[in-house]
Image (cartoon, rainbow, N blue to C red; front, side, top):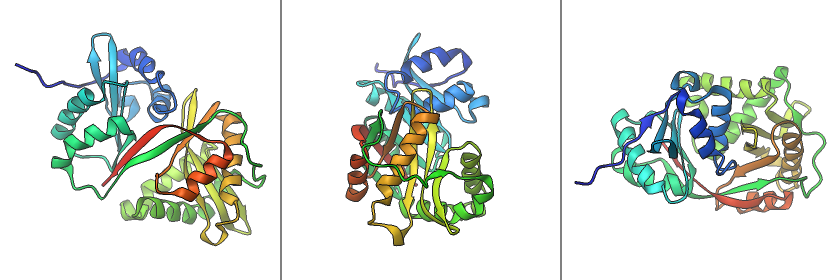
Length: 283
């Protein structure tokens, strides 16, 4: 009789195996790796359970089951891992707002979860994962800099506008936006929120939303609507790359919707190259 693959909740003893697994693709695994480097692998310190799949002494896949469900697997193990993670996810019920990660891992996982968790509000199966490991190819905008804590109220409307435009719903709909405000404030305090602010207006903003020793991931790139079409996105992103490589990690990554041709072209001008594919399922 065939047995359904199973996943288990990892603990601190699994940290070496988790680190070895994530090191197989530091760019794709950046979000989980950053969390593990900061907090280890025990659920109590991570703030969410980390599920593992694989034989004794060798993990083939992990899935961080927090506000976002983030699977990561070695090539060839994605479908078996999806079976294991889907079984545990169905038992616990949906607690995440998004499933996001490498497309090869997200796709089969969503196929299995869709009957129980669907329909999704949005499914983005093809999001190019892009990276740069050298100086930007375009001139950085010198007015892009880390946001200061006292500028949080100036930044917040731009952050809300970006989130609403990108995700399709306002972050203020849940808890009046308290959780989102706290996350933005946390990034500002950590020096991971950058912007061009002039005359009390945010012209450009971006966050370095995840950081590991090997790579970091840029998120939330936004240009004020009335300033678009002037090259601010490319120049601003180039400034973020310069800052991130100097302060955060040697490789800077981001992922973008495949249908967003202007953004993909801007990132290509900066020097980003496609290194993989992500996928997102939004609820």
